[in-house]
Image: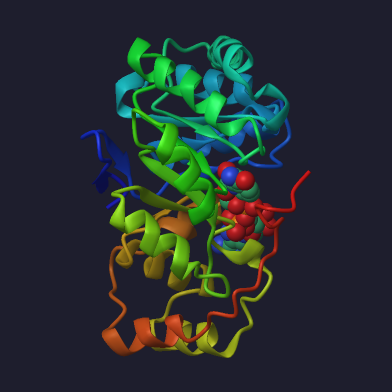
Length: 272
Ligand code: NAD
């Protein structure tokens, strides 16, 4: 169910499915999208300093009346906030905007070259201080993780990467599995850009589900944390209505076969 959790390498529990709020407009749109998701039963929200909607996320959570400890909140340190002192200031600004004492997960948004190991030092302190219950990275390839792990005292608990049927990221997934770093999928639905793919159509027909539900179920069964985004309540409901069916081995194999290593977003060595 929506309360199913996975366990991070420090013992922290993270709900397997969350709501993403990238490009959700600050103000009413962000507030309403979090409010409706919480009503449906979502207990995991993925925001970022860069998304400029932390205030609305925090307000919707507070107004929901749901105890803070029952909701898993992730935010991220943006590229221009990286560096040791900078990141320590950045978490305080994020917490201030969220109106919270802590976040459940704080991530380095992108591996800014020459900066991310210093940023990680700050995240380790943030973790020690209790301002983040878990820390991790995003958009890290194995070579970034190698560099980070050499300097790190605390291992990242999560790596949030672009991951959907046409970009399955086997190398990064294997590396993370070996290091006990949990994978989270961003753009998990492939931004809804290929729902007409024959495999998705076939499996949707077979299970009487939608392509979005087939994808979320595939991620769920693969042990990957997924954070599909929608601002519409009926789609938020649709995206998590995946607990009444199961993909069989042959279905999972067909999903594996969809991989084209095709990125929709930036390559982690080429972002700016
Ligand atoms: P996504 O794959 O979740 O696709 C979202 C889009 O798909 C929506 O805007 C909507 O148009 C459409 N959609 C959603 N549900 C649908 C449904 N049931 N039927 C039809 N269309 C539907 O893409 P995303 O928003 O880019 O990624 C999800 C979340 O991942 C973000 O909101 C954000 O929290 C996170 N993210 C992180 C990074 C990063 O660098 N760490 C980058 C991008 C996104």
